[in-house]
Image (tube, rainbow, N blue to C red; front, side, top):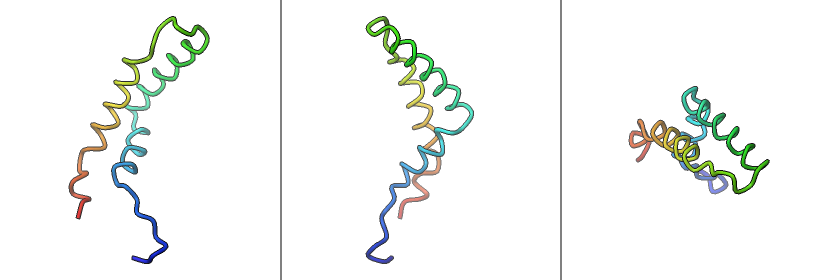
Length: 71
């Protein structure tokens, strides 16, 4: 490994890929719709449930096979 090479966190890479999976994309679209509603009417609601659902989907996907990438 050269001195100029940056270390890349495999979890970050996996999360990015998982965020594009169909199940997680569906939840991301739901979160985006909620965010737009809240921006139009601040204080009317929160998107806490939508955020949790999306993050849980991404993290659940990212954890599969992650330990095989560790050295």
